[in-house]
Length: 236
Ligand code: TMP
Image (cartoon, rainbow, N blue to C red):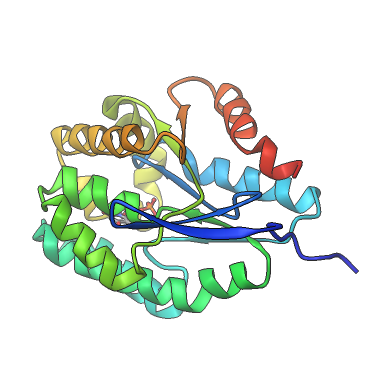
């Protein structure tokens, strides 16, 4: 029988109002970046590496990841609302996030699994904070309420110019898919440039947590960086 992949010791520390859980090996891992950055397909590959390595892993995403969260996601992305106030958007994604933590993330971590999550609070800081202009201290307050200021152990930021992300994320093939263009896809390029900068600012403030993946190159070049960013976890 396989034994759970557990950190051998863990310690939580509060720094600047955020709760970091330190352990021997990162277990709560998030993938972040602009739409069109390629993070979601690289996440699938990374999850297959964990499976091959015999490490119990849960793959999940935000907004969503639970039945309630998926209902909020459909509401959140529905183009019929047009541009929403950033605080309204934040309250929706934080409601989804709290349910996700309670129902999926925390139970999986408690069982000793690695959780690989497509987006978490950094998305809100970048999209609603830098993109929509909601003050970061307001988002930090909401985060304290929703998640107890939970911070992932490791975050891979897929970074590339907004122009390239937009081209990739909104190519003709994606537009042709059912639901291929959502409410946020309708935003202008300047919005996505602010979101990119927002991500880079958060990453610069927490270099120990972030691994910046330059995703402007080929798929293979990006995949090699993803592997390097996770090799210690895969071989722990
Ligand atoms: P996805 O396409 O990567 O699943 O993300 C859905 C959209 O939701 C994407 O445009 C980013 C946006 N989003 C926010 O604006 N704030 C958030 O907190 C999250 C998690 C996603």
